[in-house]
Image (cartoon, rainbow, N blue to C red; front, top):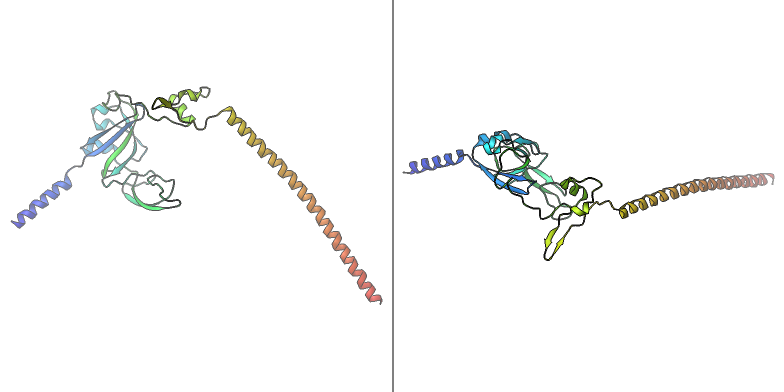
Length: 258
C-alpha cells in the first residue's frame, strides 16, 4: 500500500512538472488606448518570440489566424516568480544587481540608498509567466477588445513636443489649442504645458545671454587690470629691493672707511 501511494505521488508530480504552463501575453494598443490579455497554451506558437530581446519587433502570425499581418514590439515581462525583465541584461535568467536612483525596476525609498535586487534578463524564454507586447502594425482582421474600440485618454501629454507628436502638428501650430482636458466636476482642467516656447521665454533667454556676455566682458577687464597692477607691484618690489641693496652697500662702505 505504501509503495502504491509513493508511486501515485510520483506519477502526479511528473504529470505536474511536464504539463505545459500557459503563458499570458498582454498586448497594448497605444493608438486606441486599449489592452488585452491572451493565454497561449501551445509553446510552438511562442517559438518566434524565444531568444528575442526587449524592444525587438516580432511578427504575430504564429499566434493564430486572427493575428495575421500584426507586428508586435516586445516591451517586457515577468517570470513565474514575479521578477521583471530589465533592458540591457543580455541573458534569459535571473541576476542580482546593485540598483540606485534612476535605474529601472527600482524606486528609491531613502535619499542616496542603494539596494541589491533580483531581476530577469531581457531575453525572452519559456520560463516567463507574462509577456508584454505593444502593437506596432495592425493586421487585416480586427481583434475584439483591442482594435475595434476607442478608449479616450484621461490624461494627455504635458510636454509641448509630445503634444505635437500625438497630433502630428507642425512648428507653426499653436500647441495650447490641442491640450487634452479632463473633467473635474463642473469645469475642465488642463495641464501646464512644459517646454513651451513663448515670447516671454525667448526674452528671458536673451536676458540671461546678455547677462552672461556682460559678465564675460567684466571678467576680461578685471583680468587686464589685475595683470597691469601685478606688473606695477613687481616693479615697485624690484625698486624697493634695489634701494635696500644700495643702502646696505653704502653702510658697508662707511664701515670699511672707519
